[in-house]
Length: 189
Image (cartoon, rainbow, N blue to C red; front, side):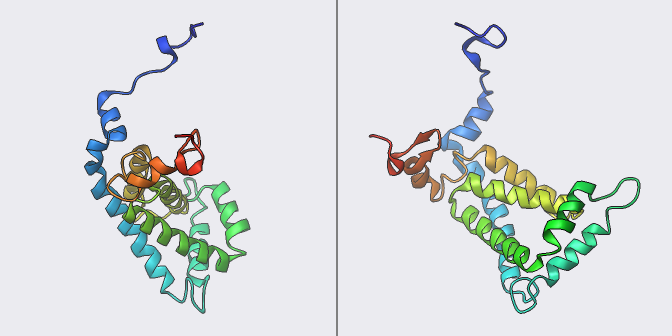
């Protein structure tokens, strides 16, 4: 029985350009530069934090504490830079545990950078990179975060092809997806 509320066949076809860029491996070359740019930005940021005593060394957590304090100072006024609910998250969950979050942020940035540079779990790495970008934006920090967020969003949309010139070329067909497991996860050949 056909669903009377939707289009015939139950779905709306993507435009040809979207099908090509996000699903055809012959267009995978388009994603190499954005993937490497976003990956290098995250990798460099994570590497710098891992070699900073204020992030992961003897004084781990001090840089993050300063960041959170500055973010919380941006919650006042008629149009605050930091929304009240994000300020509550920072004050209640991040500020009391700066050492933990400092290591988590440093490690996350480094892992996202390495994964994107290698084309390894590109869609997942881009998701976590975008999540960190959104966290920094919500904390009132602009810098390169809007550009990196757009890059991460596009890489998430292109998850099937963005890592084709990388390890995903072999890894994704072998692992498959949660809705269609590949040979390494038990799909019968």
